[in-house]
Image (cartoon, rainbow, N blue to C red; front, side):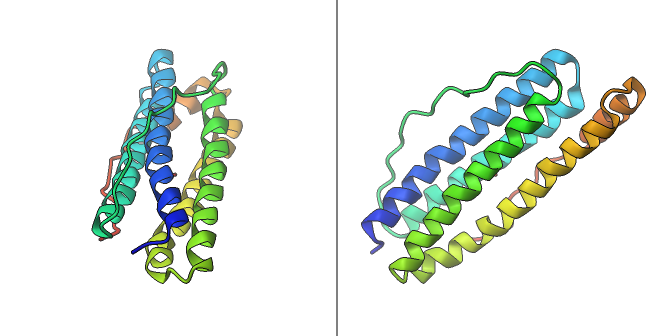
Length: 170
Ligand code: FEO
């Protein structure tokens, strides 16, 4: 049986990951509207990844005979104006999610729940990678985004991103 606080945080993470999917879909939505199909694709794939993360937390709870409580998913809370806004929103959100994962890790570790810390190891690594990707995209957009030809090339590159199922096996 898992610790009550750890279960509460794991359950909360199901909701946060679904919210992340919804937020990224909104970023994709913004770029669709601007005619940047590559950026839209990038965030649509990101939304798929977040949904998969939610399902991993969902399945982990079930595998441990814990009930999952599905809560309301909030409306994406963002103001998007410039082409850089979604990128900053994405990075800021990833920092926030990293904080949630670390709090969860800390709670599991403090009650010696090593099964959960092992499960979370994958997410700790994943968050590092996602922060790097989000950061790199900002750097590239700042470098090339104001030149239409370069923006077109960057958009074309981002169109190639395809969804890959997370490698974590439960
Ligand atoms: Fe699933 Fe990038 O948070």
